[in-house]
Image (cartoon, rainbow, N blue to C red; front, side, top):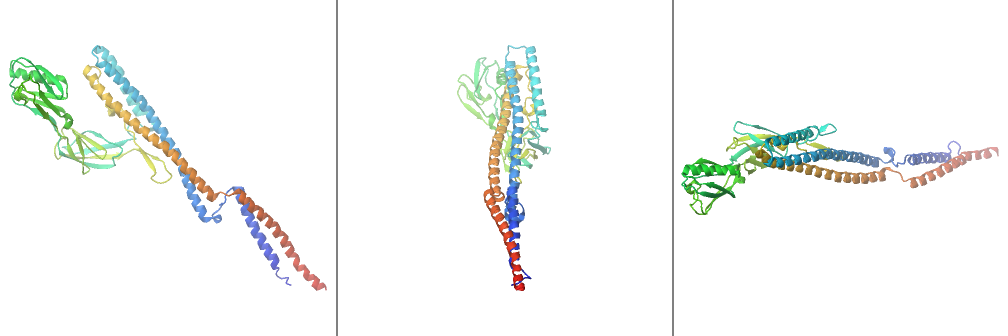
Length: 455
């Protein structure tokens, strides 16, 4: 028997210390609700769960970002709803002013209301905001600026969301032309009523006593018909030119059986002989890629450039610089998980209604077409905003589902099973009590040596 080292007591003490440590950890888990409270509890589990926590918090913020984006879009769309109403009213006024039952003073009153409505469109465009960010003045859209040399200029530049940022080189390889007819000398002078069909429109005029008078009457009749074709020249040769460049201005001349303008229109006398006149669309490249021409407009990769007539020359060169200024909505938890929102300028100038004139029937007539185009532009923008909102609503639903599933995954790693841990706590409690009891017994064992000494 040994008394210097009580091995049984040391063992009981060690077991007691271990049981107390496990009991303390179990108590910590039960009180915190977490299985992993420090890295030592589960190093790999802690690292994984912390990444998941970052994702969950990022996803929840992305949900809030998307909801803010929906609110922004609804603000812009609500303003455009009113712009639509204003445009419909101006169009109604244009139809009213077109009617010849109104006097000049009546049209002046109509114009006064129209002018105020146009001013309100400008105000809505300039002052519609969300969190102090302008929405309809073009700041949230794609900006296109241009530079050109002396032989190239632009009348209009349009763009879409698909345009990439940067400087795009432009070059015209084929100039656009108008459908044009040039005839020979007019050989008709019988002072009779005549009809010629041009571009699907019947032109009625009176042949004069002389070829010069016939030419004058015919040219005046064509120009008064306002059919998109301009007549010129004289008895030595009549010229017909489409107002539009390219194939959009193509037209056909048909002689009626009773008409004989002969060489003046290049038609056989008293016979139905058609002449088809065609224009040529501009051809060229944008950023080195062959574009699609339509009249004076060249398009490629979402960018569309309309050249002025002065710039419509072969080998004309220039460039456009595209700057992307769309709003970026962060709709994910990680880098570059964003969505671009582009809202075009909706002011009167960009809608083309700043120059409408309802003071004359001609101006009112032209305004109807202009307003149809403006209404279509606003409809297109509203449709795009609606598409954005629908996408964001689905984004919110998806982000919510992903966040929920990641939270569940993180919970399986980090959270404690309270029932199982309570069983562990109970076990270590019992072991603690048993260890204390056994330590007391072990400490009493050396006293048996006294019996040997006393004997």
